[in-house]
View 1 (cartoon, rainbow, N blue to C red):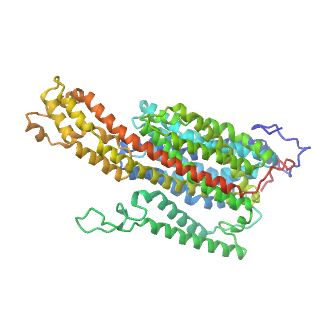
View 2 (spheres, helix red, strand yellow):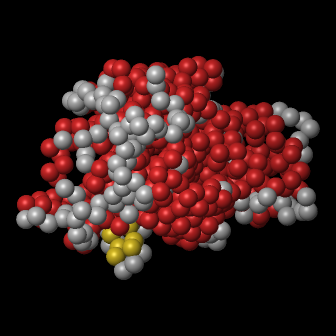
View 3 (cartoon, rainbow, N blue to C red):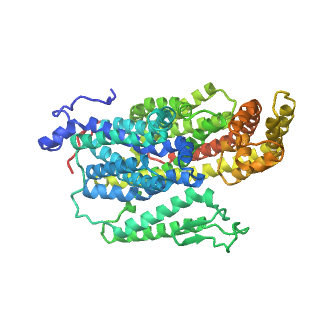
Length: 639
């Protein structure tokens, strides 16, 4: 009979239990509460990396930020998170996983408060970096504490709960963020701030509960030292690679698209008065990848040398001799390329192609969240019967099929009911794969190395996610621009607007003057929209507010020449009201062209994601087929 999520206190006579103090026995009895707290913390970490996708438009509006600045709100979190994971996994092994977890939770809360109350986009980016640092402390600790705490038949169930939390969190971010953004304006006009401030009470509960329910574990069999060289090399290497992956579409993968400035550093250098970058100027992004690869190679050499001389490196490459660990990390890297990128594509698709608000878009992920939450705990039971390898492979195949179906159905006019079974299938796949894959990766790793192993697992996943978002993002916005620009250019919406307005005998002279300006400015507006697409600024709905653009950009004298005093009190509002039926049709026509282009881009991005996940499924066949040892002790040794 499978172990449930809240089993009875183990029978000490039937189960071999290492000697424990009374305090350790008490903590052991609270292990399932500890699992709940760790899973709740994981929800915060993962949801915070997805919630920004829903909040992007609101953040840009509050600060008047450019697309690139707003992108950094998410990018800096991933950059710091990915670069610091291995370091804090190791420090957790050395100085106590609970200690590092609590320190990380405090750091994460400081970052959340600072982000929620940020007064500028620069301040927000800085505090998001603090959040990423806190998440890097907490994330490997959640996995290593579970690995060290649960053994035998309980371990599969524990990883199932952990996996459900990780999977559901990816969907909770858009749902919770969308709800707060849409309904939180009664609390604060900048309702997106609530999406970060809600972390505070949850984080406080996690901190207090951790002291009460989580037993400290660490490796005290060795005299530890901090591998400073390894930490520096790993952080700089991963930071360079992740930075390049995230910023490639902004600055250009091969050819420079925009000027990069960091303090006194500017590239490319332009002559005074020159604003355009010369054609065929090499981008600095390949250099960032090269630097990252060189530093990573140096990191490997330094670590191997330390390991061979009996030292204590940050990462022990000798652990790769465990097939479950080596092939498991490779599988995680490949599948993460597709899993995370498609969430970004779907978030934007529902908001922009289907014109839904933030909360409506978030709710569309609910079937995925439910399926993941239901399936993940069951995956442990299936693993005990068929082996974790086949459960992981089956899950990834389900994911790949779901992504392929999305690539065939993501049209702007497609009914949502068509997406429901696809999201359910995708949720089942994630639920089967994510927890048991982590279980396989750490299954053969000694418990005293759990922090290093889980840190590597999460680093590879985050690195894969960053690369996947970069690749799928490049496909998404590149295809969007290519597909939408011809539709915008060929649109007859402006001509139709002019004909309809002129035929309306109820319009005043002032109305007709503005209508003529709008009709005659069609080519200019189309050019502005296409320029926005070329700049990867995505789906800028302000470009379709043609009447507003006329008032903002056309000098008052241009109206007065035609006998209209546009500054007359109330006249602008009256003209907007009179022309609204026509301007709405014009905006709808432009939106339809953009939505059609983005739908094509989203389907292409889903196809790329499906290929990545299918590649992960093939790679998973290299994993050993492990089953839980039912006779193993369910207790945890005190380290």
